[in-house]
Image (cartoon, helix red, strand yellow):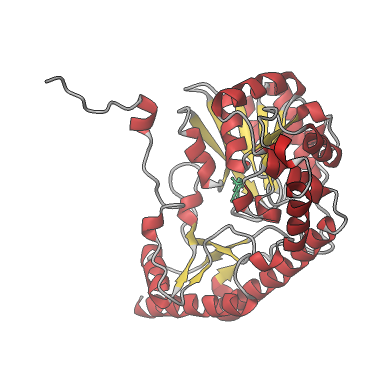
Length: 397
Ligand SMILES: Cc1ncc(COP(=O)(O)O)c(C=O)c1O
């Protein structure tokens, strides 16, 4: 008999197992545990009435049947124009995706070849590194400071001969650090991309989630450059279960990226695109997203206040001005693997700093604590459980 063992592709056979971030086997959530690990929006803060009305309008109309046909690979023209108007770009540059992760995969497949070099934020959104596994590329890490990726350090490395094909950054309320790229650094980054010929992948899912009074940069430099591919998603404002996002492509690539998309999944759901187009035209939507930003700010304050109250000078944490996460550093000579275990024993889960290191080891003692989904009371309780675990270990020495 011939051997009928399945022989997967080298890509499939070579995919590394999930490690750290996103590895569900590391999570032990007993009943009553407080999960500060996730990236979900709060279901209370989703615009459910706007959703319901838009769904009714689309499904009750005679548009329903045509929306069940195949639709253009780049997206429904009316949704592309609505997003283009918000982004201040031409609608030809907008491609509708099935969410941010899909947009990142399209970006990587469009810009990189095996063996190429990409510069990434350090700390980095770890699931982007998993997207890079599709291609097999070299990664160079550049530190993220208090106002975004360190463009001085990048310039120095480029002068020394670093030659990336692309650079990945989360410019607003960065995951995990929460920092926002300044307008000056945005311009410097674009100047470097244009001088050294690399493309910036700007992944911006948190930009609409901001504290009242915080001025989110408009990203004029990014928008005005043909060296930027901007990836976005409705996951943080309308919910990740929607699976809808978009890319703003450099004009020179938009046709070919659409061809690529055609060869992968073909299109995004026409019905969902019609629903979201309707929602974007609803005057209640933007105020509800701003109001959600204000509620998230209250939670962020509750979390940082609890951390400072419990840990005093054993914690360094900045109050987030938007997004979903606080990035805290605990200072002490502690085994942080044991802390992670002890915290789960006490009923609180968080993401360990080490899991966000872009290359090698780093961020020992850092914790990414998500405040988006949990009530202020549970944030305070979660921090006091963490502090109990901390004291237990620091007392033992
Ligand atoms: C920085 C960043 N990029 C992309 C995504 C993925 O977005 P989506 O859920 O739409 O795939 C996330 C989700 O947490 C994120 O934090």
